[in-house]
Image (cartoon, rainbow, N blue to C red; front, side, top):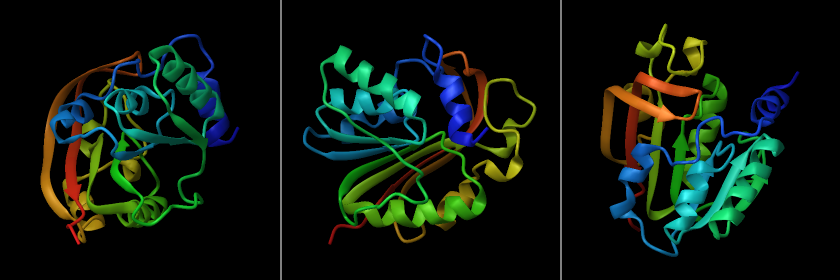
Length: 203
């Protein structure tokens, strides 16, 4: 089964794998958001983050390689009464528009190192001047915990890796440590994460 097929199978149930509420770190950025901002939600799955952003008045594009997940995202958006553009895409092959987004939300998207490098470069380039890039991902300290995350160490985030990948952006914050997740059945309990926020310098 392909990775996309595996995620289709995971999202095929009636519930929401990671809940319907947005990621708490993304939600904490609400004071920085303004209606009309253009947002790109990477690996948005069943739409919890993209739909929340749309509810804040942003123009949102949600990308995921699971068509099943994005159908649920579209249904969630309809139920909430918000507009969401949901597109099935491989992040490494998507036609990233340059300077097109005011916010990129990279929330719990864990890619192999070569793919992460490719997607990071394109995510940085897709930011408009002053645009924000927000990341949350599991760190190596998550190993052995049952609160979620990939088992392959190379897929995990470190603060140093985030700083390296986005060295061309302005670092606003980069935090590593323990948080308590309550995000559906797949993300429950204490977890070790990296949270980072970058900004493209204004032209």
